[in-house]
Length: 141
Image 1 (cartoon, rainbow, N blue to C red):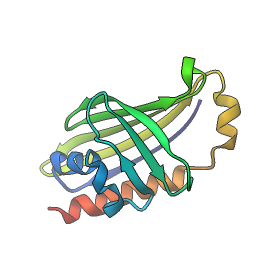
Image 2: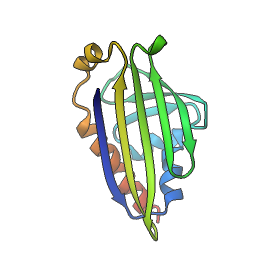
Image 3: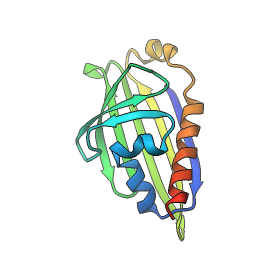
C-alpha cells in the first residue's frame, strides 16, 4: 500500500485550523497546492478537488468522516473497491492554542499496485499543504 503523509505543529486554536480545512471556497486563498475545491465540506457530501499537481484533472471524493474539530476523512476511487484513495486529516490539541496537524493519504484496492506506479511523489505537495495551513492559521491568531 502506497501512502503519503505530513505533520506539523501549528500555534493556533483547533477551531481556527478546522475552519480553514472545511472552507472549500477558501482553499485557493491559503493553499498553493490546490486550484479549487467545489462543493461544501460537510459530512457525507461529495466534493471535487482540483490540484496543481494534476492540471485539468478533477478528484471527486466523499467526506466520509467529519468529527469537528479533530478528524476528517475524504474517500474516493473506483467502483467495487478496485482502487481507492483515503485522505485523513487530524487536528490534535497539544496545549493552549497549539495543535498537531497531520494528513495522510493511503491507496488501496486490487488495482492499487498498478495505478500507484503512475502517481508521482506527492510528498513535497503534502509538506507544502501543511506549511500553507500553518502560515494561514498562525496569521489568523
